[in-house]
Image (cartoon, rainbow, N blue to C red; front, top):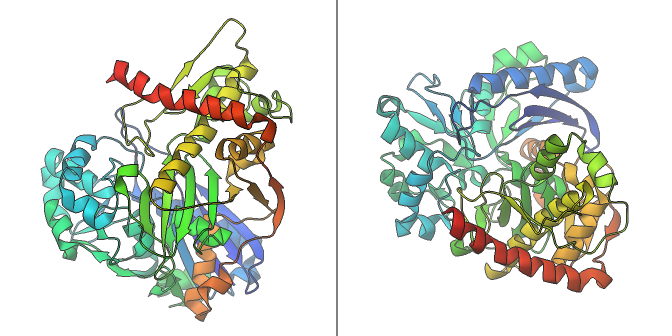
Length: 484
């Protein structure tokens, strides 16, 4: 048996698979986010441990015999979080999360240093880790002076599991301190934020062993002490391992709280000007690119709260057949946007509203707005040198066939729907745990799921969608001009 632990923003998921990669069972532990000031987003790292223990306790209770046979563990986690430890490994302050934008000034200052884009292949976004440390230095200097280690969220869980400070390439690529092409920490970039490599965890590949389970936890859980903990992956790379998106040309579109268009690459293809993320993949000698939308299903959830109708109710009002765009446009920039704008200040908007703009029209505009945001990411990937011919849909929003029809038509490419199953980050983490424990071939283990169906672009609406996308593209500079 192999265990995958995925540390998300809203909870920890523990997933158990057998040697044939059949899902045996899962457990969950809940998490909350603290927002003490506008633009801030934090969590207490001790809550991650509590949620992990809750998830494991649920799994152990429901599947005691299978859990006792665990031989390897893989980790996945929310990226970019700044977890600051002192010399005794005590947490110095709440972790500053991926969706925290307080360090936008520091991010811009670091991004103005040409070394960052040259070595990391990415813009320095406010959500990345390095500008958060710069913010702490500028605003909490007493805490900064005590920083002995900076860990990403899942690697804080690893410290608890193993007692070791270790990270891996895919998650570390999102810090703005990794030389992404060479897959190693950059002394120059660390020095630019008044840090050095001693304050960073050591690095391994995601498929390699990164510590063994501490005897105390092994005894508590009734499993073997020292069983390997895989390097693991950041959440999107782990999801890619779960989906089998590990070879060049393979891609998925993720409709979660945020949205991701993820493409695997066999080589390092940076183009930071396009605001595409270029990161190391979890497998050795592979990379990936991502276009990132900050509010995907979050946009529909926002409309749900405003209207008092569930997200499923809203989408069901549209029926099954894809409709031509109504003329009402929605910009899904409720929390700013990454790809392609790198703009933490821009906010969402409806345009083209009229007396006849019903609730269904607003829902349609929200779904189309997110679909066009994915089209923006596709265009940015093309600029960065990646060509895609089809994508696989994952995430909670992919349950809406109407939304997938809109995305297929906006992207002008087929969208594959995987067969029922759990292929997310926790499953990818369990696969990495299996590889680290057994030495199995990563490409063989990380195979793609069976396709249950394919949604083709609506040829009859292709022209109408193209026109609506051009309107959508024109709105950002117009809205930005009156809000800057």
